[in-house]
Structures are given as structure tokens and as C-alpha cells.
Image 1 (spheres, rainbow, N blue to C red):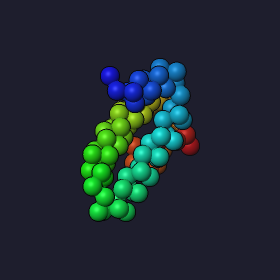
Image 2: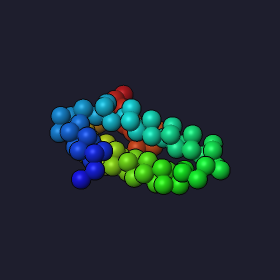
Image 3: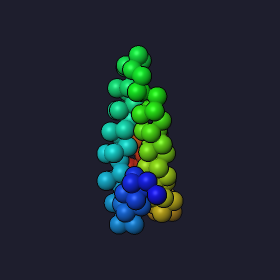
Image 4: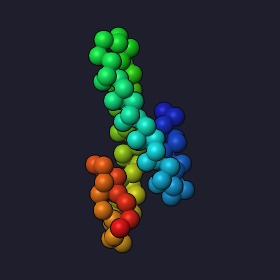
Length: 85
């Protein structure tokens, strides 16, 4: 199992949704930086690695959506991220 999966699982298990939002935003920022450097040879494997981590983090955040959905009062921001009204 990859390290990011263990980290995400820990945050989900301890109901620490906020701890996942920061890393998700950071990884999106990294993708923006990579996109700004189109000639870099290393960017494709790094980009794929970051995209894979984003998938894992979003899956963790999705677990909070399912748990919070019946309570209502949540509104979507920035794609898959939900915040309390």
C-alpha cells in the first residue's frame, strides 16, 4: 500500500477531513507548476504520480461526503470539496 493511502485512511478513520483539503490543494498547485514548465523531461512521471495521489485524496474526501450527506447543510466548492453552510 502506498504511503498516501495510509495517510488518507488515517485521516478518514479519525474523522479529520480538514487534514485532507490542504494536501489536495497543494497537489493541484504542483500540477499547475508542472504545467508551467512544458519542456521539463521529468514532468510526465511526476505529473502522473501527483494525479494518482489526487485520486486517493478525493476518494478519502468522498467518504466524508457520504457520511455527511444525510445531515445536509453542505455546499460544494472547488469541485469535490464540501464545506458547511
